[in-house]
Length: 110
Image 1 (cartoon, rainbow, N blue to C red):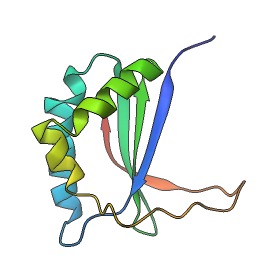
Image 2: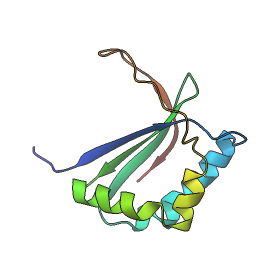
Image 3: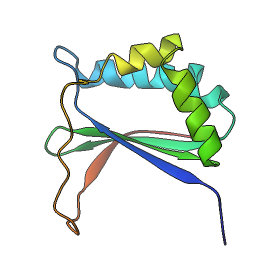
Image 4: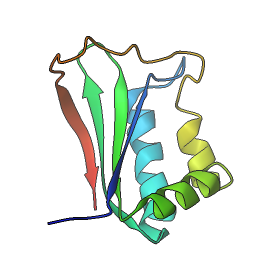
């Protein structure tokens, strides 16, 4: 079965001074006030790697929905709050090609 769905994989680390409970609270607010209201949102998981990195894995109905959400999220108060949890100066290091990585689920939405 063909689908136009796209998966957004957004790895990140917590900003200094932020806790996982801060992240989860901001994530739930972002979900309720923004993503649930955004046309084309399918589902989302917030996951954590054993090395402390997190990632948002978001499924969109199509690339247009993803692009529109990305453009609007930073302008939305709940989006700004969620993004303030992220250390924008620290990159998630890519792993060796073909290596399996495992993440624990912190939250699932949709």
